[in-house]
Length: 188
Length: 188
Image (cartoon, rainbow over all chains, first blue to last red; front, top):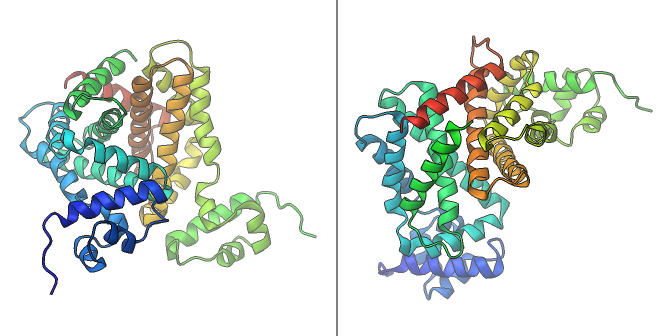
């Protein structure tokens, strides 16, 4: 009779990331991850459908935070609504998560199929944001363009956030990247 | 003794696209494509490594045209160098190509693995453009941000270009999307 293990998910994620970093994603089995976390395979599969899910767990919530930011933003020009979405999403990336995010990215960068999955995640995010912006009455081209641009700002700021030695928060970095974008685009 | 068939590549591409549209990408074999084009499978494989390549043939040249635009652009702010890259790439999409591009996109939109490949193509383009901009002395964040933004402008303009009934050229649409981006970003 297996019982729910408190903190099991986090222990499995930490153990998996360590194994992936050492042995590569393909070279790691679920059995090894479970053993390293001091848990059974059954417990692993109670939390994750497969080992890839360890890296993509919480994707729905990730997307949801951007969309919630769009829905709750004050009336204003499309780009300020996207800025509100970016602010809202920073709650998903507190500074305690930075080391995990950095290690996760290194694993993803080392594996083309994980890279594709990550690209798909960000592309789905742009599509969902475009839809949410349209629902706020923003015209199609403006919705697609601000959504794509917002995702580009997130990617660049996120890359800076997980860089070795960076200490600014994701919120600060996103604001800086948005300001830089404004200056770059105005001088074209 | 097979001889080089003039126009064979184009005939195979047209036949493949028609089959993919009717039967789906997975439901079409190389044998069917070759037969529909009045050619042999051997001729098919002289032109394409597999049936997916029919849709992605010319990807190197596609990327190269953006990069050439960056290399040849006059000195100026990063965003004007990216605008030059977008102009340069329009030579890859003359109006005669619009119907093919529209049909190709419909096939890709219907198949998740083709969508992933297309995303990967655009992501590689952003990475290559970032590198080319850095080589022109542009600082890392500005290079990544303008490259990603440039790809977003291309995607949105390309989507408009292949929309049913659209008659403006890709160059015109890209200029309009860039102008809209400038106005959107300045009012954030």
